[in-house]
Length: 167
Image (cartoon, rainbow, N blue to C red):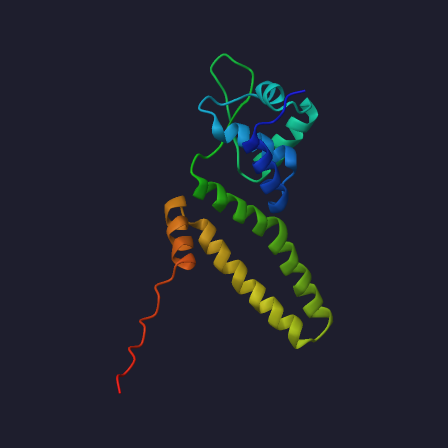
């Protein structure tokens, strides 16, 4: 059995934390790193995972928008490509998490709010709605604008320091 390269293990751990399966993380790593788009057979050989694990992982990655299928003229195989820009990858991950996690939570909060008049539920719904709107606006941007917005949030301009008066 092949031992996955260290980066594949890192991606597998990261994928698990973000809501993807470990095999999806390993597959993404293999697709993301190469210059020549691999087919499923290449991934099986390179990662040492079963064909069914690879197929399931590729379906998962496609559902998240993290990989696309490419075909070579005269070849029936599907080859897989991934965005090379890490900012684009993160943008796609955030958009997928919003669709898969936040949207269903908003629906559940709305239903709870309709059943029970509770100011805390209404407030939580309002906050989560606003957060989802902000995340949606963020993930609608192209990768460069997404990166600039994240960088601005991570490193806001420091407020001017007050000068101490000398006595």
